[in-house]
Length: 316
Image 1 (cartoon, one colour):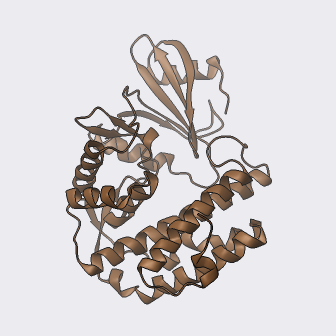
Image 2 (image 1 turned 120 degrees about the vertical axis):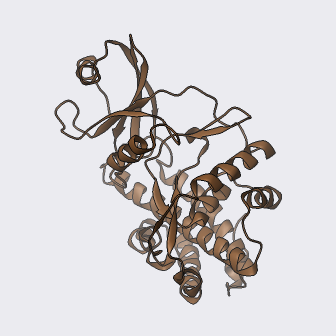
Image 3 (image 1 turned 180 degrees about the vertical axis):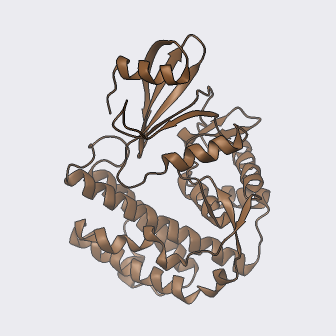
């Protein structure tokens, strides 16, 4: 979304600051961001820009409540559509370096950070894995797939759903859910070797701790040694049931990502969103889905789920 100097000037009036300049900062899957330079300070303008997900107001409320302790300070949320045609918020500009790779120090710092925020809990039951919207959406959008990859994913999906239902009792006794950040990708983390600070809290929600943990493992493609370091530092239980819960939640996360990519591709085909940014082409979607097919198979095999010989020999 393009904005004008006049629009940014009107926003600055709301902040009671004097505009010097503004510049494009970056685009996320659900937002576009600009830096606003003023005579008083630097700010980030975050504009909601997504049909798949809209949580900007909740992000603002959360960051306002935490007063910069967990994420950036926020100063303004506007959904009036009087200045911009989309909802937007203003937050502090944070300088720092994103992690170049998941080294031992970074993995341990993130594990400790997660342990801290997961202590914040509310009393709420967990939605069954097979009933999660991200998992269910696969059946709505799998028609976009070519027959080869569709047949392989469909069979894995059936096996996964059966596994979720078979082990539903593992999650039924959960009475409290933990605060989850929801998106620990590299561009959302500032890392200085001594500490981590996370931005982009648009996915903030309450869920089981495993939801955050599996996202981190999946996002950084941790190998078994790195995953062990991460979970041990976090203090994750080493019981058979705990490992089963972790793998089941990882499986649900992967299906959520497969569905998200397909839904995004559908919106691009219908010209409802721009063909820009991450996962913006059919080639991107197929490449990432092939990678996730391998991950899904490994999880199913580890859990001794019945997988046909054809799926066992999926492309690496």
